[in-house]
Structure formats: structure tokens, C-alpha cells
Image 1: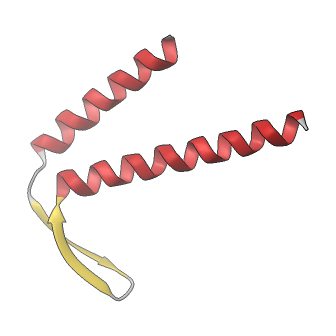
Image 2: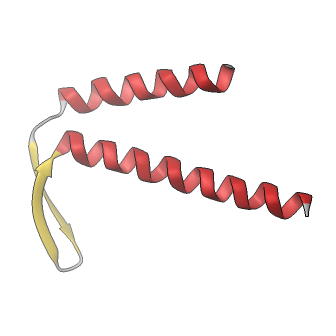
Image 3: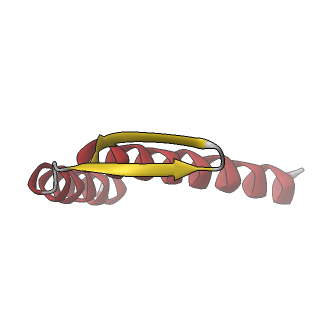
Length: 66
């Protein structure tokens, strides 16, 4: 229950932060260049970090119990 509450607080903070920073930004990634809203960039970065963390955590838990 505590983890769920912490996750909810993080989601609220990220949402408020990204809404306040909704200006367009130029993004260069290797050869790709495009413009996107900073809110979208922040959201995608947080989601990517969460998914990566969950996958790594799952792999370490599975490795220690096998």
C-alpha cells in the first residue's frame, strides 16, 4: 500500500511539473531531429525509466531466487 501511495505522489509531481513546462523543445537523437512538447519528453522519460527499473528489478529478483 505504501508503494502505491508513493507511486501516486510521484505521478502527481511529474504531471504538475510537465504541465507547467509545456513549451516546444528541439530534440536531437543521433541523426533524428524533431520538436516535441517538453511535457511529452518528460512523460516519456519517466515512463522509460520506470519500465527499465521494473525490468531490472524483476531480473535481479528472479536471479537470486533461482
